Image (tube, rainbow, N blue to C red; front, top):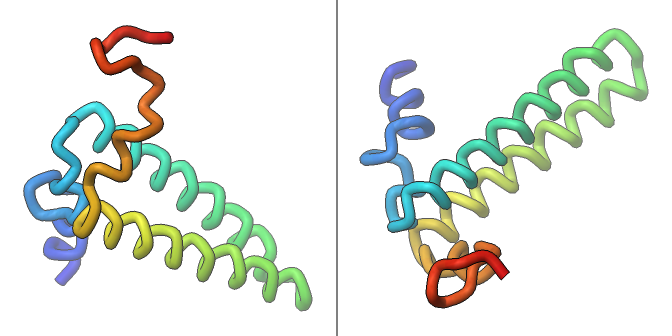
Length: 95
């Protein structure tokens, strides 16, 4: 179960991000999700000892989960969505 979960998230051939054809863009999206989860986990774990702040920590974790699901769903259904703001012109050069 742990291995299948790991592969679903980090294996480019299994993850829903596989639908993003540009490998560098796929890496960027996975890296952005990783930073988001690192921040969400540190906020949540640092706040569990404080009563009301625990609610904020849980909200951050739930928000991170929702963003991850939305990103994976978009990558599966509309992989071209991630191409629109890549910062490059159509000929491949930076603007």
